[in-house]
Length: 564
Image 1 (cartoon, rainbow, N blue to C red):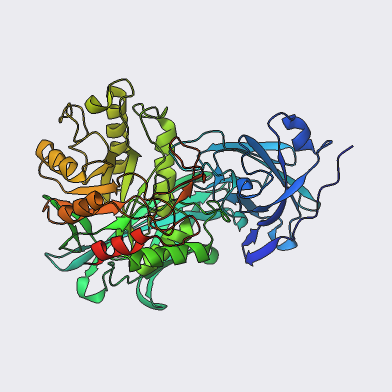
Image 2: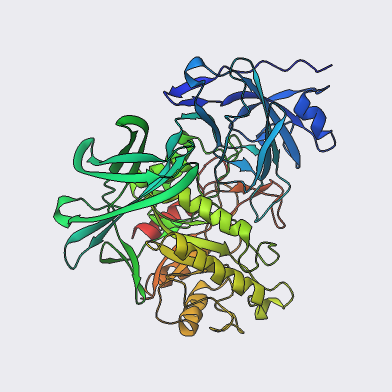
């Protein structure tokens, strides 16, 4: 006989076509229980947890690693019945499986990107539905804590048979002929058994006022997914540019109609801006820039990596107040609300997939999983003007060679180059990069380190960063260098933790090197870890603020360097 499930919160109508399943879910940590019993709710003693959330922010599950199962019961409102219904997950760490009413919908591997299932054939329209989600956080990369659970929102979405999967927009200024080149890419899905003619009516708005409209018609084949593009140019003088001082945002609003009846609508913010590497300099909107920043780990003792608005906004405003405007914040796709806020305040980001270190199992040529991670990240984040580059990995190196002679393995080099090709297939408007710890090594040259396909050379240094930058420039001249991580030993706990004199000197010298376009200190915040070298506190104390955001002496030191 099934145990009584605990009380759950009611579903929340977010909009006409969206229902939130966030709230209280049943939960069980179950490495050794039968999956079948859990799915069928047989003799299961459920606990409760909040979604979105991480189980390891609770005292009871603080150190649990493995399989956690979530259960949610819900009914469908009448206005969602007889529609196409999808369930969308913002992120589940790391490996997930989803069942609805005992039917396996599918699985997803990757803890930071969204996924969805069409549940129309499996949903009970007139009685209760039982949703079960497995989250397994066994897989871990890097020195940050592998927060387990459903860390982003869960949403039911109602669509008609024809829908817009996404719209991507590029708006690239040409400063020679003073125009803006626009391209809009529509990804459309038809779940009908008949071919339909789709009308797409798009408006570009600035501060809620329409400044431009475009119409586009597509013949959409039955039971298909198609991509259709339109391109056009406009006068540059009619648009305001987006940059770190003037983050002007436009909105693309598109209505999808079939037989003159609206079936779907999407709204996406974007910016008119151009990022490019020319020679050994980085240019934003045709002006050379040198920009510093901070790495930030998605970590907080109370919130884990769920990234609530109040934390994201406070952190990013603080980082900007310290002189930060550009960085690869972390080794994983960022939370959507963080990117939205960076769009609004003018903070530039390189996003990266979580491929890290000398023993990463993902580093082989044409890896379908890492291609999928890149595709999901770029598909989701394409419209964000704050995202100016994509990185395919961090600090890969040969684990066999001694430290002073480390280079990339052939497999790692093949991996990097194949992933850079994949990025190029998906987005040609942003910088392509990989973050190296070997580019300045004794045995490194252009035969065993990526170079030709990179727009920006990113290097990390926890020793002599000036020497590392100079050596990288000598071996790989003609391209800009960004010191994407810099540090010398852990800064230490609040409030006395401070930057070493050696690190201060290096940061000052790097500002004078013409081919170095900036540096980013590791890190803004302390973060939970069970990686080697972590202090007894359980937090790696590299931050200029601690895990609760209390500032250290290093806070004022780095502000003085980056603001001057």
